[in-house]
Structure formats: C-alpha cells, structure tokens
Amino acid sequence: MAYNSNKDLKLYYSIGEVARMFNVNESLLRYWEKEFPMISPKKAGGNIRQYRKEDIENIRLVYHLVKEKGMTLQGAKQRLKVNKEKTAQTAEVVSRLKEIREELVKLRKSLDYLT
Image 1 (cartoon, rainbow, N blue to C red):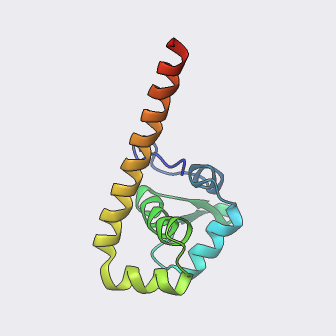
Image 2: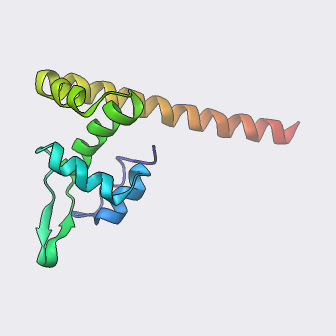
C-alpha cells in the first residue's frame, strides 16, 4: 500500500490523489463512500470530492480489512461497528511493519551491491 500518513501537509486531497495513495481506482473509492458512511468527503462545486485526513484514515481502515485481510464488505462493516479502535491499531501496526520491511529490502539491496 502506497499510503503514507506522514504526508498530512494538505487539508484536502482530490479523489485521484487518494486513489494513488492506496493504488485503487477512483470508482472503488466512490463505491466505498456509498457503503461506509464514515467515508464522507466534502463536495465542492460540481460534486468534486475533497478528502480530509479523517476520510483518508477511514479509507485506510476499509482498505486494511477488505484488501489486506480479504474480508467482505459486510464483514468489514461489522468489524468497524464492533471495534473500530482496535481495527485502527491493527492497521497501523501492519502499515508500520510494511514500512520496516521496505526499508530492510532497501538495505539488503545496498549490501548486495557492495559485495
């Protein structure tokens, strides 16, 4: 997943930017918005979606459950309804572990280059 929580310099992100963060189609984000009321981007003139940090965090949770854990949308809805906080903590741990793995892979490549 390309999402990086350290990039919270902007107040609003376009649907294209958010789609690239998660490497998903814009249509999937619009679908999740219909299925998960907690994803509610602000709509500017012409129905242009403006995603806030909270929306992106909620998308991250749905992404974690559906794309990474392979849950159905109904299962994801139920999990978020029962224990959203624990789900958020688990998603954060998974994200950090992926970042660590990427860094380790880079280090290994650097070491392989030296030998």
